[in-house]
Image (cartoon, rainbow, N blue to C red):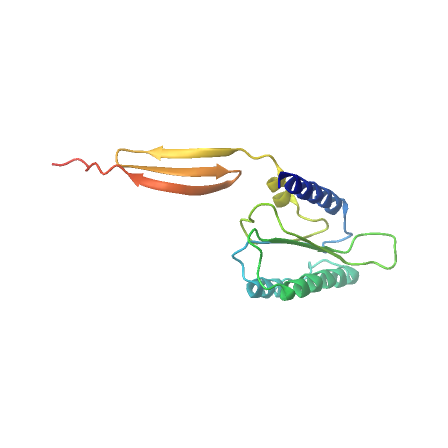
Length: 174
């Protein structure tokens, strides 16, 4: 089990390194992060609102439209978003090849995606995935006062409430 997890993380690191090497001429690369609670229809509707950057050339706008179309087609085929969310990347790299090809990558992240993010740039926004791959310390947090105590776990940047108890001792009486 641990070996397959480490192999998956190694492959993910290699894919992130490959994606970070890809560069566009203009702002035409789309990075999309969808949390698990996002509906597919809601994500499609939000993406249909996206427009090409205002100062893009005709080829840049065409590349952006092709990238957006490939993401929309993929999302329409999805029944639902996986439990950790979904990261989608589409771009047309800047190469000397006259036959430019749009490529598309789907990544199931190792940890849950916290918020919806859509970035259009000349490179991919990979920081959320890199953050998930860093060794993160898990910290237990406890707060106390005279009547109650609360417990939580801080995992990276995510705080999860673990419980809340009361002492049952009445407060001051007059």
